[in-house]
Amino acid sequence: MSFSVPLLQFVAFLDVFAVGLIVPLIPNHVRQMGGNHIYVGLLGSMFAGFQLLSGPVIGSLSDLKGRKQILILTILVCCVAYLIMGVTNYFAIILLMRPVLGIFKHTQLLAKASVPDYECDEMKQSVIYGKMFAICGVGIALGPIVGGHIVEDHPIHGFRFVAILVAICFLVNACLVYLLPKVNVPVRRKFNPTSSSHSILHSLLSCSKQSFVQLSKVEWSKYWIIFMFQALSSFAMGVYVSNYALYLKTQYGLSPKYIGYVVSIQGVIGAISGFMMGYINSFYTHDKDYSIRNYHVFILLSASLLGICLSINIVMYTALSIPLAIGNAVGRLVTLDMLLKRSHGDHRGTLIGASNSVRSLCQVVAPLVAGFIGEFFNVAYVIYASFFSASIGLIMSFHYKTKWLLKVD
Image (tube, rainbow, N blue to C red; front, side, top):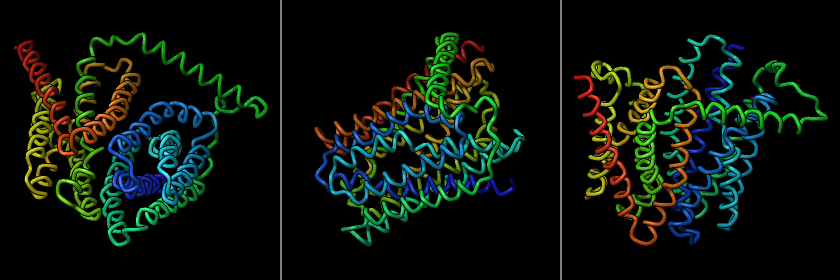
């Protein structure tokens, strides 16, 4: 099974590359079809909302039926959905495909969950996840560039060509997953085919009951401030990301090709920042509860977003997007470390799940807020909402840091 892990890593790369090809192009494509900013925001919110609801269900099905089979199924559904998005001339069809993609687009989740099936050593697993993160960073950087060039060279049918290319990528991924060796399904996942529906329903109900029991045991008052930091930073970046393609086009007149370059720069910087986390932490050996790092992250986010709001040209915008990407990447890791540090190992899985839910909820709300501001005010004012959210986080993080320092003294 030596080739299985590299195969999974390539599947993760191709998935992110394919998504990077088309996602930055969707807002402009919808606008060209006559949709307004609210419709653009609605597309992002619907995807995130269905992702939030379907994640546990897809995960449970992969436990029951085996991850390989569910992964192939979800990839093929996404292949068809992206192809339909590209060939249709009706906004209603695109609106329908976004929930479908939200339900089935869990390639990254299933790929990461499949790693232990082919590598039992936990130490090696962490290395594999690190490499997978790096490879996906390359995919994030390359996808928008290639997609932008295609649309630039073929302004009329460019989006359709990109959607076909994305569908091909997903089809190739399905074939690659099919090549993975068969993994013996544990006894707990085997069931009688005549009662498969009943077994799946019973398993989901049982998992739900256990989840509620675990949630009731968590002392949430200890963690609300950390979840608030996550919500504020996620909302700020969610509003920014859902708007940047339209912002770059309307404010600076950038073509899809150059928008792809700007997006790729941010993706590369974010990936590098994640890898440099160990080096960054070496400067904060005295920061035991990560409060100072969290404060510095919000300084970086707030200053960068304010500068972007006031930027006068694309060079200034791009320069300021670099510290913003660093702050976003580091901030996600810092708040997670804060959460795990405070948990002391208790209910760790439950807390990480709650953390993911907070980010998912922000991804549902942020595009809608960006859409309303862009439609009723101006696209230029959308980033002010990001700055406002980051500023609240800056004030709260300063108070949190000061309170902790006084407690230490």
